Image (cartoon, rainbow, N blue to C red; front, top):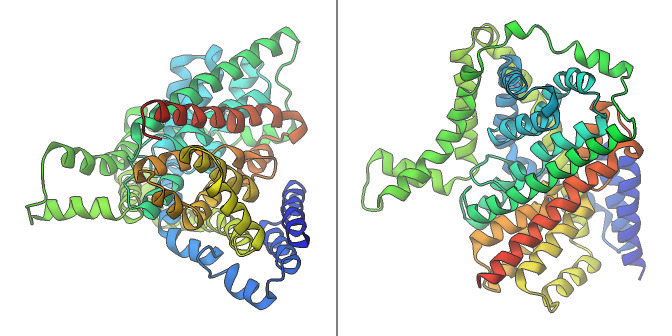
Length: 461
């Protein structure tokens, strides 16, 4: 009884400290100690094994995925510094106009994140541009936050096949699948997320206009708007797209070549490269991201003058997102050592549920506990996924359903991405979390359940 109360207390404290802006390293360590003490775990083992270096240890995760975070951050920095990301945003804005402000925000964020640009870079890039759009359209900031989150934090993150997102890579590296696993399921779920998400925010805008609610500027907006710079300095949009095309092309080309013919009997360099691309779900997308970064250097003169500085800043920018994710996984690594987690795992695995509904429930709950979709997915893959494979769930289907499920209940109020987005935009949970909850929690949950229902109707679940 005390152990279960300790688990709840540790989770409640983690949520409270996150909402109060506490450092995630301190918060995760304190909460891990609360869980350890109330569950009778040895403190030395907790601090020196379960939290840092166990199968779900913080630094076990950080070591495994360091290369991907590093290359992703460098690519994001290159796209931002060369102003390629801004050029794409401006081109879409000019094409669709102010009346389509919400669609502009969603499309730009979706395009950039699917192309490999890190979510936080996308938010920083889009918000200064969004201020002008919101002012002209008299759009409430809470709806801009929701629309950009639809693009950056839902379907491109977990559902669409081929993306070099950390969620796609975690599933592929854990299950031996590739980045395109369960692709048609992901596309089905993505269409639901986009359709319902945009319907909700557009409806919200109509209601806001009817109620006289509009854009309210604050001092932070003026500072952020200064980051836009001169639009004339940005490269042409068609050149700005090339680095992202390179990233996606490197990832997708091996898949296309393998689909076009049988390479198993060949020992050529191309055949070995194709095999390598399919067996290295961390290294291959990392190589694609670095090639995208080098493409920025070749195409944009501003990059060539400071390539060392930009790559160095990108490397530095990768550390905090990596360690923040690792910290919540370290907390989860302690939680998984408790009897309460074992009882939960046993209960969910033995519950009279179809296997895919069980996958949805377990991945969702774990992601909710740590407030991180990538952290929750990694914990799920290490602790529960093998049992579902034993039940007969196909690895490709497990890959996609677990990834989509992890992107639902992760976005509770203590989610780091939610907190960071509100901080950048100068919003509070009271002002904006209702809309954020609908588009990043409720709608992804509906999309995942709809995908599972479709698979069950087809006899695949």
